[in-house]
Image (cartoon, rainbow, N blue to C red):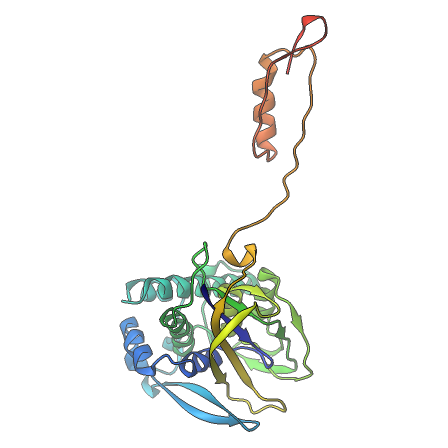
Length: 311
């Protein structure tokens, strides 16, 4: 049996909601704090969690409080600095790999929005300490929960379609519409299914989108699974519907080729017979076919009409 997880996101996804769901699923917050301390930024924040009510339902809200002496420009970082921080940290290998991939995709999306390379992206809200804690903490938690990996090394994490949200928010670059450009780019990069639930709020943050777009092996309905644990994480908003991210944990018996990391593709085979062909031409044909994308080329000598050589 394969241990998998499913993210049910009726009101979107954010870094703190993911971290709250991880803690609610049974990952000790002391374990997360100890692992996160290896990043070397423990003096810059305080991580804690509390149980709150959302429309009569109890859920875990994670808080990353930034130290007052670490607020300001130096609380934001470029991608190379964040990657180096993660690489040097004593983290579980899978969590380290997943965290690096999440930040890489986040930088690619931000770079595309601003017209610069990922390495030159200057992270603002998404690159601050709280996002580092949310992303690395979530990856450490998924590793702790024993989620199986597919052939590409990604966790067997499934995710529901995501709500678009709406309205306007204030960002470091001014007033922008929701979904914000980085989220839209991440959706485009992955081909994420989306829908509107009628709530005009920022429901999917860049951090949450990067986690889902990077780590989820499939989007859509949950797989056939036997649920063994449910984690409930919430964000700061108390919305008109229960603002809870559900993390379902269990075992799956049937998985699709896409989820396992196998890729299915259609390959066309073109066969022909050539009469009276000069063998010197064959080498040139090989080069020309490979140059335009042929996967393989095979020839076999045959005898044609009037004993002419062919292939």
